[in-house]
Amino acid sequence: MNPQEVLKDAQDALSARRVFGDPVQAGGATVIPVATVGGGGGGGSKANQEGVGFGVAAKPAGVFVVKDGEARWRPVINVNHIVLGGQLIALAGILMLPFVVKQFRR
Image (cartoon, rainbow, N blue to C red; front, top):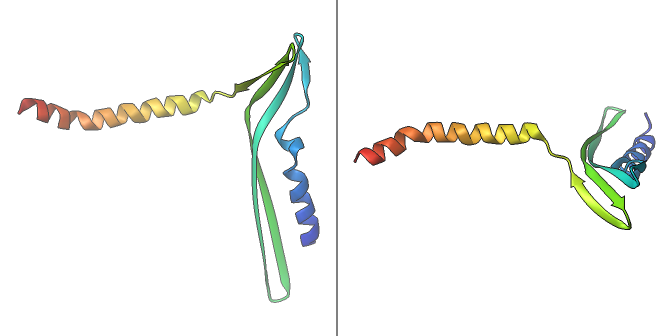
């Protein structure tokens, strides 16, 4: 593939259209979905051969809700991250328990 074509595709992939989705009308409000988009690429050459590549990753960030002339941000809540954080805190507490008990016995 031509490196110029890859760069053009990369530019198209990281446009505002990837971040902001098409507005949706619902219940008298306009809902605009928003995503976090990132990308990276690289290339090189060796012995008359060229290679180039590019990757894009996107994940939902939230929505803007526009109603009665007022816009409000509604972030996405990732319950898996909340559960994982709680598990890590519980694990830290369990690991610290013998040290705390030892301090109170003194």
